[in-house]
Length: 113
Length: 289
Ligand SMILES: Nc1nc2c(ncn2[C@@H]2O[C@H](COP(=O)(O)OP(=O)(O)OP(=O)(O)O)[C@@H](O)[C@H]2O)c(=O)[nH]1
Ligand SMILES: [Mg+2]
Ligand SMILES: [Zn+2]
Ligand SMILES: [Zn+2]
Image 1 (tube, protein in one colour):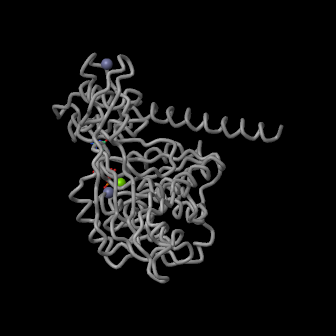
Image 2 (cartoon, rainbow over the protein chains, first blue to last red; image 1 turned 90 degrees about the vertical axis):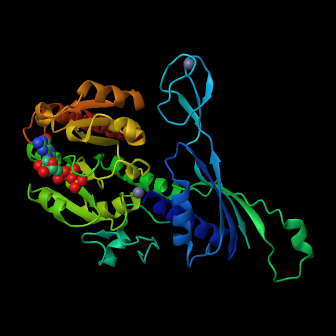
Image 3 (spheres, each protein chain N blue to C red; image 1 turned 180 degrees about the vertical axis):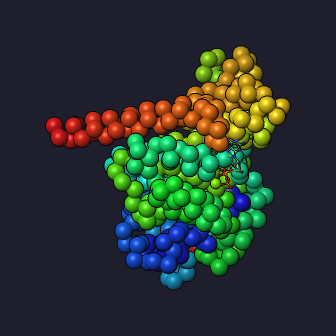
């Protein structure tokens, strides 16, 4: 499962931060995940609990901010919400659209102690 | 766990690597763990409070990280990429669902291009050494990575496999990913291109059902065309779907078993290899001047 390795990535980045920023426990992990990123949010939560066990982020609360897909038509410049990468421009029918948002897979913030 | 570099490898096994920790001193990529730190700012909102706190109690604080979850993989991929570039190698990441014919396509390619190129193969599967053995039967060097539960190769595993494999300069390096049309799309290995192989028995709708993969690929190889007479597979529709998710994608039709269409694939490889060579040469001339 894809989400498992993403969570491993999250924990690795947190451990690296812990070294640099001198903290010993994590209360909250806040992620930003775009709807076009191909990440299953429920699977992410499930994996996080499993992967975080015994690490610095054990018992941390996981917050996920979902970012809606947004694209712009390169021809008519119409901006539109998209649910798939290959959506057509609702105004002129052109594709592909330039994706402006929705591909995020980011650690946004940590609350640490 | 890779003890020297501290990298977590989970239950990944790399042939000739996992139990030989001496290899880890010769990483193709440097594990200096200082990749992509530039975005971390310490917005210590508890700062004013902290001064009045009793010494020894650390208050909770918010760290704004803003780091891509894949940044670690991407840093390893960048290391691999520069290694490939330095050595004039053309690295390709072959992705597909299980059984589309990646290994069959590869063994035929290796045989046919043996005289022309130095070649090497990294084989990714969850279990077994079978595919690497099929490759080695052609006389070409191969190393197998078993990802265990992992459903894709990542750039870190590939870096270690390259160390073990030590491909010659200017060689073709084929990386056969784990059969999976989903996850390998997100994990850059440092390759020049992803090549997605779709066999005609899978149905023409796959580019639309797995758009991320077809979007990430530079070339789609439609394989098993020898079976077309027995199927209801609409080739034109399939091509239209692939171009819908990726208008720039190159498309070739082959049968890896009969050999039909393989020359076009070889020409695609030759052209790409050639352009990499001339890039490398240009660079050398520039640095020499
Ligand atoms: N008819 C026909 N069969 C093919 C062709 N290419 C591969 N096959 C068959 O498809 C089956 C799977 O081929 P492999 O080369 O093992 O496929 P793969 O993509 O490497 O499979 P995994 O590594 O397990 O994902 C084998 O039985 C091959 O003989 C082709 O062009 N035509
Ligand atoms: Mg195979
Ligand atoms: Zn995966
Ligand atoms: Zn438009």
